[in-house]
Length: 437
Image (cartoon, rainbow, N blue to C red; front, side, top):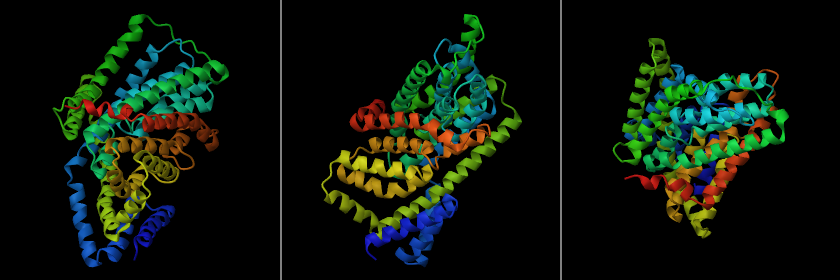
C-alpha cells in the first residue's frame, strides 16, 4: 500500500468514527487496531500497541497535566476565584462597558490560575452573565468576553494543553508555557479596547451603570487580600521556570502547594471541597491520559505506513519557505478547529507537522504557540466550538445558538489578528522563552 492510500485509510477511519459520535480515546484506539493489523504485522503490532500504552502514561513530562488541573480545581471549588472576581469588580469603575471589562480582567486573572478553559468559562458565565443581562447589556456583549477570556486559559501558564502539545511534539515544555504569556496579555488588551469602543459607539449595548459608592479602602482592600496573593501563585509557577530552578513538573507541584496554602489561609478548604477537587481532577486527567495512550501508537503507525515521510517529501519538494509552510499548517488547524476537539487536533496533526517543521527549519516553540492559538480559536469556532455549547448551557433558554455564534465573532477576529501578528513578528511569542536561564 502506498503512503497516500495509507494516509487516506487512517485519516478516513478517524473521520468516520468521530462523525459516529464515539469518544476521542475510543476512536483513536479503534484506528490504532486497524493500523496495527495492516501496517505493524497483526499480532506483533497489537503487542507493540500495548507496550506503547505503558510507555505513554509513564512519561515524566506529562506529570504537570494533573497538577495544573488540580490548581484550577482548588481555586474553583474553594470559592477563592469568586472572591477574586468580586474584588476586581469593586476596583474597576467609570469605564464604558464596565461589567464586560470586569469580565475580561477577572477571566484573565483566573486563566493564569486555572489552566482550564471550560472551568473558566463556566465560572464567569454563572457569576457575571446574569448580572450583565439584568443591567441591560446586549447578550452578545455579555457572552463574548466570557467565552474569549475563558479560552485564554489555554495560553497562560498553567495550561494543561500546552503541556500536552509540548510533550507529544517533543518541545521544551518550559519554553512553550512561557511563550503563550505575551500573546494572551495582548489579546486581553485588545478585548478591553473592543469593549470600550463598542460601548462608546453603541451605549445601548452596554448601559452605563452606577457602581455602589465605596471608599478607597473598600475598593482596594479586597483586591489586596484576594487578588494579589493569588497572583503570587502565578509568580511562583512562572518565576521558577524563568529562573531555571524548577522543571515544569516541579513548578506545577509548587503551584499546587501554594494553592492549598492559600485556600487554608482564607479558611475555605473543607473536606467536601477537597473531595470534589480530587474527583474532578481525576476525571479530567484520566480522560487526557487515555487519549495520550493512543497517540504514541498512532504516530508509529503513520511512520511505518510511510505516510509521515511521504507528506514531508511532498512538502519539502515544493521548496516552500518556512513561513508559507507555517501558514498552511495554520489553515489546516483552523479548519479542523471547526469540527473536532482540541486534543484530536493535536493527535491528528502532530505526527505529520513536527517532521515537516524540522525539515524546513521552523522554530518548534513558534509552531507550538500557533498550535495553542488555533486551538483557542477552535473553542469559539462555529459550528462545534466547545465553549459555544458551554455558553449555551449557561445562558437563559431564550438565547438562541445563533446569538452565541454571533457573540464569538468579534473576539475570533481579534484572536486572528494576534495570530497574524505572531506569524509576522515571531518574537512576540519567543521573547519570554529566551529569558530562561
